[in-house]
Image (cartoon, rainbow, N blue to C red; front, side, top):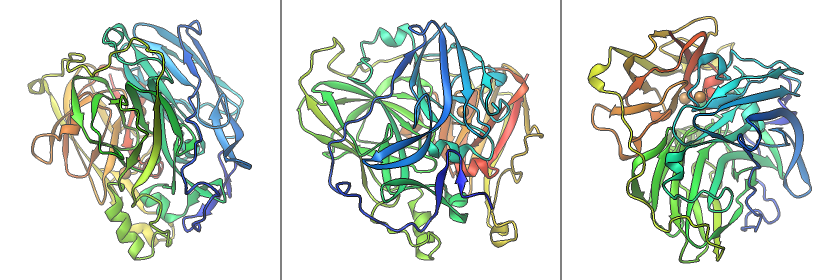
Length: 491
Ligand code: C2O
Ligand code: CU
Ligand code: CU
């Protein structure tokens, strides 16, 4: 077995950690929403320095936990880059383990991608120059060392990456960072006596690490002070495994304006939004009525599978009182009068036109099946077999070879539960779901979508990956670490 201390030294706990109450945590607190520091590449002279480091974080007062972060103790700064620029990044690894930094959603060549092939050994610095050649979007960056991704991300190695461009700026959307344009990195974590613990054991390999507490930008159930007008929320699901079903506690509607790949062509009026691990969404919410309101999540879309395991005692008896099978508060918003930023007060209908590839130009179909093999579960190896097309990840094997510039259709399906499939180096369109039309929430340029029933993804491969391949994998990080990943070259 692995040592009890992993990553930054978080103590592993069994999945059956007992429920407990932090003084004041059951009631709503007025802990303000932390806003990660903003490093704008232009203001930094196109040089961004990140240091992956260990630290201590008090998620609850007086109860420090060992954590990891970039330039700090937990999570990292928000990086803002501009379309058309080239940004020099220097990532220094001050940890005692290997790490990598993957620019999730950035369309760049394979050797800059920060996946498992761009290892940064302890004490060294990785210096990729990142060309920014894509529309404005909300992305993220995170550790991607094969076998340690889940633990390092859980411990804190993740941050937001914002791409901006003139088209987006011309729309007059709320864009005052941290004021009416809020970064919301949402993660569930398990706490014991107010300290972060890392669930371990067989069940975490199977369904991913989940927790009884939701953090936003590293704070449990915080309160965000917002102006009493239209506000833009950049929602990032940075959880290892939990799927959120987000809505407002008073049932108010909102406008969905952006996906992983950037702004939609038209805004979509919604009352709820599903966000799987790795997915992002931008929404506009009107707080003009001045009322305090919560963003809440319904049960995890995989809750029925977890319920089944719970009933057989496989969940280790964790209560459903707080956790993935219950409705939970994500954060609260307290609107107040603030100076007007000049941003628009109503959501625009038309956003950014986009040309998607012509499906009739697709030259090839490939099929990926995300498998969960129950067979070896009780075996000597102790783990279950997680694979794609029956093969667990092997960094020495190239699974698919794609020609640069080709359009293809990939049909992806998953077994046993819903899996967020993520493909590096591309944005794609969902052509069909379960043999029919895609869902309303499937639209736009995507890099991560939930699958169980087959989906058909229309993909154009514009980024080369010959010296180092791109990954495709389930973004339940424990699935990825345990083999549900493959790699492809583009040349
Ligand atoms: Cu966000 Cu391959 O990962
Ligand atoms: Cu990625
Ligand atoms: Cu999965």
